[in-house]
Length: 245
Image (cartoon, rainbow, N blue to C red; front, side, top):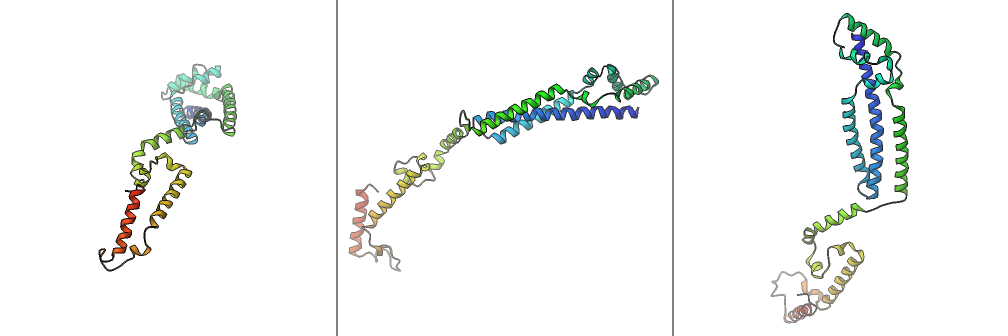
């Protein structure tokens, strides 16, 4: 009985290896097809394609292993028909009849080729699909084929959704100049704003003496003689003139 159990475990182990191999081939096809579709929409091709393939592999492998049986082996090896499954069902029973059945099945298993565990037609079909899908991936990637840039569209939506938050971080001087948030991404617009701000600063500096803000131990009132107060009034008058109130 122990010898038959060992042989039966070897049969199951061989089945599991075949299932693992076939499931891997199918998962590889799923990865390639997912990569093609995601590339056409420019949406995190590598990460999502790998995640989809891994999930498929785990689910499919678990399902296939749980549903495996000895029927396929008996179908490909007619001399084991009914005998293998019956012997497996009575693997834990010890009597003369069962022992003779186990001995007969063990004898027959020696004539079972490993190739009978593998469906060569399915393997050939899966390999063909892998080659075809790989060619499609190379074609799409090398030619930069894209139906729609989904990543850019989502980034734009995300940017619009955070517009209020960004507005709180942008100086009021830019907002008062009727500059939209989107314009801040435009280098030409940024340079134009910088030049405009620089010119306005130069205009204001024309009316301010350099020693106006020099440090002193005196109070602000004491350090403003009549002449400087005139300069200050003139300065604020120019501000109102150019709309900087």
